[in-house]
Structures are given as structure tokens and as C-alpha cells.
Length: 118
Image (cartoon, rainbow, N blue to C red; front, top):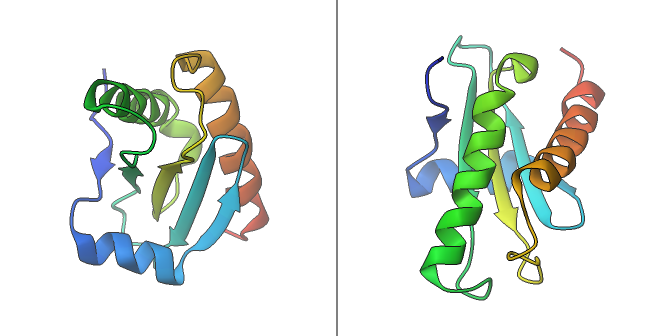
């Protein structure tokens, strides 16, 4: 197994992503992608799931799903970038599973990261 995904933890880093990142959207998620000056640190991920989505159990499950998609697809997303994934408040959390999450997240991220020149 490889290293876990680097996480964005500080409020300052989230805010930088919101302010300077590009915003993309898919049916269930909003993405803020900020390409960093190449620093060899690779991809860093932040997740945001508001209380409007559901109780803590559901929110944690969604965050775990998002992290897992990133963990398993890390090699394909090899960029120095900060990505914040926000679950939309109308997401059908109970129907969301790994495969649905992966398909949606990866399609959008490929589009977003390909459109940015390397």
C-alpha cells in the first residue's frame, strides 16, 4: 500500500484554495483546485461536508469515501495541487457509494487537471 493522501488541515489553506483555486462542479460535489508551484509535495486534499448534509455518521462516511477515491487514484493525479472537495447539501448521501463517488470525482478531476497545462 502507498502513503495516505496528504490532507489540507489549516483554515488558511482552505481559504487560499477557495480564493485562488479554480471552481468546478459536478452533480454532487464542488471542487476548488489550486495548482501550486511545483514543490514535489504532490496532491493535497481537503474535504468539506456541512451539517445540512446529515448527521456526523453520514458526513464522516462521505469524507472517508472521498479520501479513499483519492488514495486509490493518487498515481493518476500526479500534480502539485491543493484540492478541496465540497459535498453539495442536496447530495443523496445514503445512495452514494465508492463506485459512484469515484466515477464522478475522477471524471471532473481529469477534466479539470487536463485543461490546466502542465
